[in-house]
Length: 224
Length: 224
DNA sequence: ATTACTATATTACGAGTAC
DNA sequence: TGTACTCGTAATATAGTAA
Image (cartoon, rainbow over all chains, first blue to last red; front, side, top):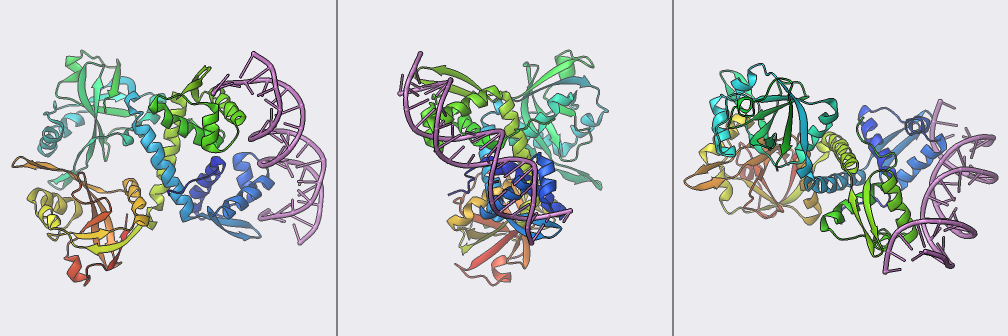
């Protein structure tokens, strides 16, 4: 029923071609070969295989070829993507972050006290958040795990405009902090933080309640 | 930097193993071979390759083996998944649905006139929706495309409770209808429709404005 | 029933080269 | 510069078996 690749061998090349397609630049067999570290002949054969499998259209010219992925390839991407998602959803229990407590600049407190946010917070998450957030700076090694959040069930606090200023929506992922207190990782639409900072809201003043000091390592576990 | 598979050849087996792992059942080399249509010997070799590549842990017993995917494999799943997502996001311009107009049962009008929905609609989408939705029944062939919606930027209208009744959140995907009028595909948290019906909101009375009749084919194009 | 070794068959790769 | 053919060789899969 759903489109499938008999052999996943072709997948990385298909992914690559899908990416360069957007650039509108032609692909040569030798550039493809260089990219993946095999011979020009192999690249040529792969492109022909992809074409005869109905995964790409090609326009071969004397100075390169224009390659575009087909609808069939796109459908394969989707079916693999959704299969991966369904596997990863079951795997999320293991998602945790370890980072160091850094001082916020007070924006957390500002945002967490906007009445239109607070109301949604109470309504969707069941508590009134402490007016202030815990900011956890993640080391580079933990950073890539942030993308995994998107696969997790979360509450969605919608944005609003107030006095000409617009406040974006916020995704809220249930979590525990140091295995002691529950809260939510906040991922705002427009972050006012660098990407490597995790912002955490809770009913409590987490810093006080957990006696945390600046620079201290904090464990945040997603509890979906 | 991000975990990567030198060869995607192993990916389908890894996916399969990730799925059966959840079942807690053992995998035999011959069952794996049967599943994929190659020899038992090849299955044995693949499992050993996966193990030495650090992608699975194994416990081999005289009557089968228990296989579990490792954290490394999981990270590869995530990196492929996010790569696919980024490619698919750029591809959405091509997402369209073709289905037949069916009569709603009036719920569309009911929902579209709840003040708390209407307010968010005006605020987030910039218009006051016509109190009623267009219901498009999708043929089976179009149905699988619905999953692709999740990759598309959309507005998020949050739910609320009113007189003991709770109204779920609604995802709103910008679209055009018959290439003439703009609107939004509504995907409610708890749908009151069968999965094969697309519900469309607009500023206008779409049925009148486009002179649509029951059973007529309607083209809905996502305009993200 | 299993897993996994060794030897042979099959397939994929790349150098040389034509266009 | 391109692409893509042939063909010798390298890599990979399977058959036959042992444990």
